[in-house]
Amino acid sequence: MHDVIRNGLEGYLSRHLAPEHLAAFRAHLAECAGCREKVAAFEQQSALIQTLRVSEEDVAPAPDSMRA
Image (cartoon, rainbow, N blue to C red):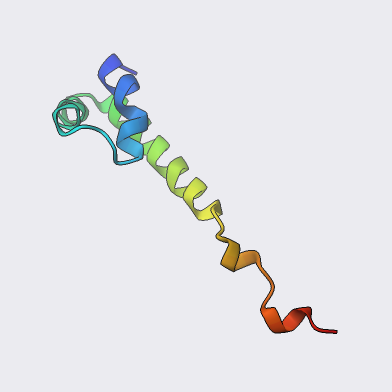
């Protein structure tokens, strides 16, 4: 993986990469199939990890369910 991708990957995946770095990042991906494939794999992994995030509302019992 080339430096422009390695150095910007975390920001790219979190959507916090500065615009000037984003342009260079995307330009490199347009030219480099190897980096494009690796970034695509990281994007898939990131999406899977996002599905594991659970809010407290999703795991907290309903208020009425605590009564015996």
